[in-house]
Length: 262
Image (cartoon, rainbow, N blue to C red; front, side):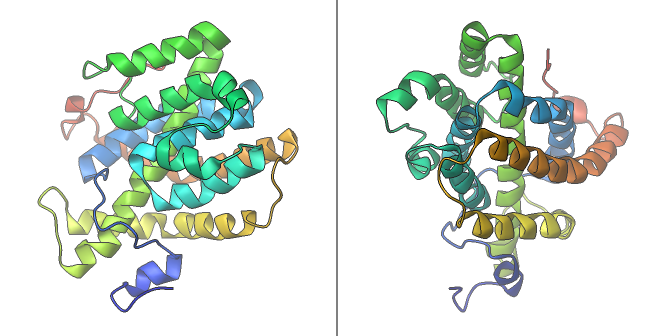
């Protein structure tokens, strides 16, 4: 239930008001740079469910969100993780920790990679990010190069969702209340909100529908759901990334280096 201080727009899309501060948000320049970065990894969004198990993908994405703390991602991926068969998806989302010995044996590499990815914003091979490189290399050694690239791609998908979600919530619960941060631009936040409001409305609706799905669904169901969700993701990321590519030579995005996907 929304309280009297909740903006109407937040009520419409069902946004959470549990957090008063949203640390991981975009400004206009980083949003352009990151959308290009995310688009470069988009092919692996679609390969990932055929290379990695649904449990591995959701363990990684929930572990990323344990650092990014996006309420939209919590709602969606806690349900998808439960459907994939994780014994306690909420614990992975909050703490980045697995519950059973079997999960710890088979999924710890993905949980650790997700936590490192969330902590370092996915800037693989940049900004002295040795921890993330080590976790990436561990997956590569254990499961192969394609699996590591798919893990990296799926992780960028969650980074997109959580950073966009937190930026939207900062606009709804801070900027619209007059609490404007020095490192944000209200006009940019408003434009981002209008661009993504349909997408995040769909995320909220999907999360509510998935609550009625059983635990441990057949793997094929998880694969189909993954592909459908990422078709939606790319349909929003692609136009934004095109703008980022066109702007890249003119607005100094070279100061936001794009990682190699090789």
